[in-house]
Image 1: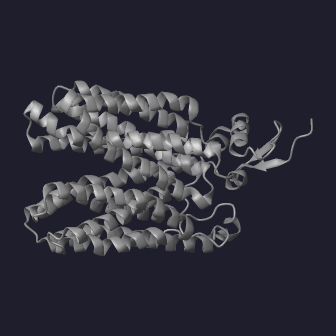
Image 2: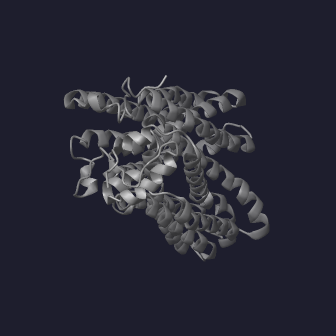
Image 3: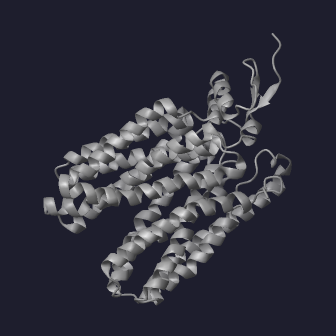
Length: 465
């Protein structure tokens, strides 16, 4: 039998249109991220009722908040490697079931110790699944739209986190605090089971790590229904595959500086983000703004971030890391100015929206950058470790804020301090982009840029009008 001409899998993905397959993939990933966002914030919404029911000390409950973040950090760093070994889909499903089961079990927790352990294990599932979701979306998207699609999926996360407050407000008065954990457990278990059937494995992973051309052919027909792909078609892909410890590969082949700068950008921005989300309502309320309006300010921060996730992602696709750098440079004076508006609510809310747009939107951009920076064989590992290191910033951000408040700093200095890590993140991303240009020049990679435009500084071939 005569074999058909060889098909370049990467080029076929690059030429796809946003059709039924792509809509289905984004729908399920956004649904998955919605549930993840809910579960990540569920303890915060249930905490007042739990503290009252158990007569617990508020300070002691802080360890429970940290447990979820600590578990997330552990899952992102350890289980990201599993995604590169066993597949994106398997880790998304496994992570969903893990955090679903242990979130559900939290409804029967009888003390702080048991709740802390359960939230830690649930956090491991969360941390292991999100980097693989980023990798899956990235590997099915054409280079010109990768960051935009990752930004869209994080809108689902932000909306899920915000919706958790509405759901908790409806459930807790009638059903008690365990009800929010029941919902937070049942939903991801259901999503995980459905994902076994509806979620595709990454085509790039199947080609590079498994050589499963039989499965790839079926997926390619779904991605490109406009093409007639024969059963005996020969498939090829340019992505490399290397053996060895994936974590070590993050620092191999001249990637050490790139990885270090990415981690610095991640951690620094998370310090500012969690500084604001943790202390903004308290600090604003102490200036004389009504508490309800102070809480609204935090909601507006998240709302601005949801819009910013898409816009900054699009900028990353269009002009590279300069899009994130620009967003962070706008955020710095906006955050610093929060300490000078006093009780004047209109400029306060406007500054909060812009700060959320730039900081949360920029964070989504960094998430997308991590998903595009590394090759297929180590993408989940690279994304997972960036997430894990970034969580260090999310843990120390609220601690730094608490210490600065304890020192009694004036609001102007307090918010100036909150803006400083954003400037550090912008600087790290700027140098990361310059490093990418230098590497491309030295390695002579210009000829390859048409097939794989740089996520850092797109070439003219990768730029779309």
